[in-house]
Amino acid sequence: MDNFVFNLMNQFGYVGMFLGMVLEAVIIVIPSELILATAGILAGRGIFSFWLAFTTGLLGSIFCAIVLYAMGYFGGRPFIQKYGKFFFMKEEDLEKCDSWFKKYGMASCFIGRNFPIIRTLISIPIGFTRQPFIKFLIYTTLGSIPWTFAFVYVGYTLGNNWILLSQFTKKLKTPILILLGVLLFKFFYQKIKRFVQK
Image (cartoon, rainbow, N blue to C red; front, side):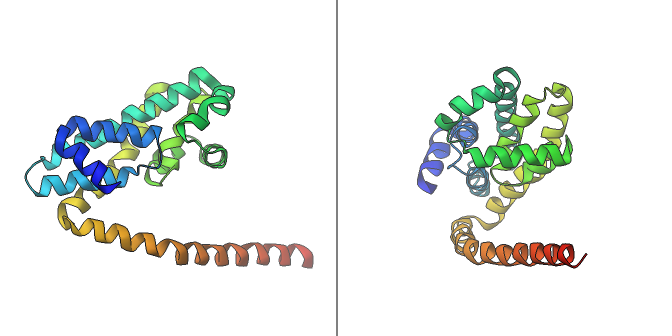
């Protein structure tokens, strides 16, 4: 996957980067952080411009968000339920994004842009509810800036060491998930205990 992204961008430049961001939205197994960090690495080597890499990544994120918003807006929930599987959209991920939107409203459009998977799919429930497009566009743009800048900058600063960092963070996923599981268990245990004591 790392080589595919690197070769795509090395061969096709900013167009390849934009295409990579589009593929990230359509085929969620390609992480945007890898695309952005690779652009940062190329900027560090003088092949890309840092700010053009940042702008291309930002425009790619916004473009994909608009496409998914349109799918939700014009296609509605039946369309996503019927065809979402062809775009590797898991039902549980869509439900998670739906609950995020119900809980946080349009703020989820800003906050959700900085969480994996949610950042891609949050546009769909916003489209379902037919939120104003301009408002959606503003929240999406502002929310995409920190994520885009952070990963381009990390790639630019760390260079090829980004790959080592990526492998290290993958190893950390299991203990982090175990820790989260323990914390969630403790949280619900305390809630149930208080409920029983009443």
